[in-house]
Length: 486
Image 1 (cartoon, rainbow, N blue to C red):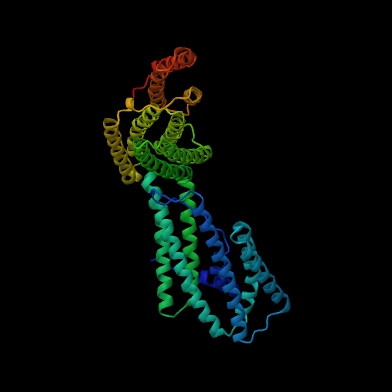
Image 2: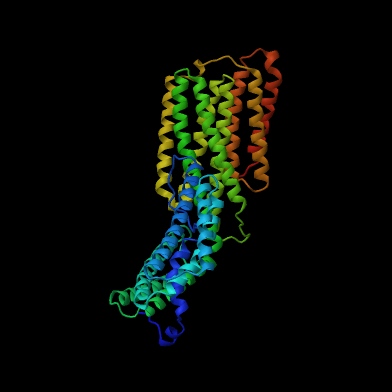
């Protein structure tokens, strides 16, 4: 068991005791930071509203904490006949005014309200310290004992949180540095000693010293973890967030395809367009998020296997989201043009392209194996539904009036998709396998468009037919140049 020597106790002054008394008050005056993501789970809530609501609640909790500190200060002063000097009373008045302003704007401007509350808290702390210093010795000791006990609990919770982070990191990047866990164990031993002293109501000052030392060990553990695993940790957080986006988007894709099949089967094409448009907008939003996220990830040339594994997760995630984004856009354009044939085939091709990418993620992101397996099973179920639907509603029997101008738009989308994928592949931003899957999916869609165009009068369709044929040749040429197998 770790202890603390007499020399260390001598350096603990009365000022240090006061610092500990107000330490927990200071903790509520600092913005919260997230050190690691929670396990990957699907979600149905929108990406923004939940965050805003949590931010407002956090700000309101901060405002209430500072109000309680003011009330506690005034109550102690009144109870023990402590006169607060005029200069300190003015600080309390200014703090109250800041809190009133913060409360009035908390919901509309939570960030500004937070800083007003922090400023108020900093004004109150010296007043609270003054009152505590002038309390009777026995009261001061009781307050100190309660505060040290609270600090033990706060520090223990912080250690548990960092232990969870260590497990989180370990699940994704392998073993973490040995000294990290050693320092956390040391911190817990020190807290156990502090608890024992407090339980026996013996030396509160020594208990405080143990808490301070435990916090030092906790800080050292965090610094060591950041130093040894910082870069990979950063990429792991990005990869985990990307997986969240993929899981949510793929679940919505599965549900969207099922709903689209039902609506088209009931000749409710307009409703199908609305449903697919919502899915497309959501996929686009997720894709933008992951592009912003990956733009901040710096991967060294001599990346470790773990780092390469994480970047592969990011790459696969971007590929899946790009596929969903592009294909839902194509399906919407086809349905608006009255081309149910192409819309169904594009969605079918999406399933074909996304399934192997999810399978690859299963092999790569082993920490999210359970939820990814669930997504894969869901996609297989939708694939069966698609096959059943096609048997019951042969697409050749579904024919709605075609507007050539809208088909031109669809062809343009496919053309842009091929060119964008080609550029990404040549710059090394898209893997060979991903590029091949995009090309094959586009080829299927183009050949379906060509079948539709061949049913139109030759004079109307000929220019577009030639363009589609040339695009098919480009796709075939690109596929012929690839060395990978898909």
